[in-house]
Length: 57
Image 1 (cartoon, one colour):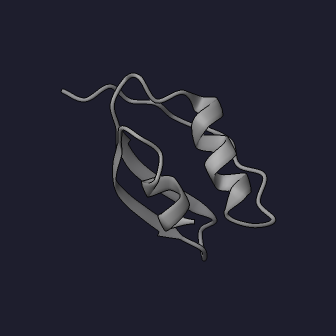
Image 2 (tube, one colour):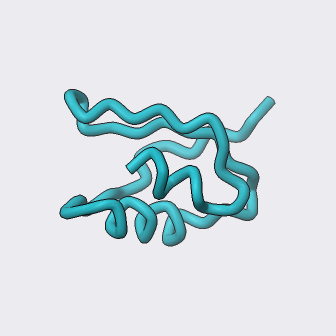
Image 3 (cartoon, helix red, strand yellow):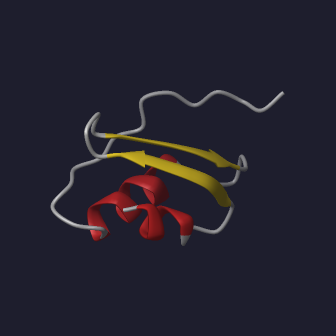
C-alpha cells in the first residue's frame, strides 16, 4: 500500500500501519480524495476512505 500511495503524484512521506488499518501521508492540495482511494484499492483488497485532510501550515 505504501508503494501505491507513494506513486500518486503530489504524495510524499507515507506511513502505513496495517495493525491500525491506517495510512498517514503528506500531499499537496492538488491530490484528490478519489486518487488516494484508487491507490489504496489498487494495492490489494482494501476499501479506503479519507478521514481527515488537514492543511499544511
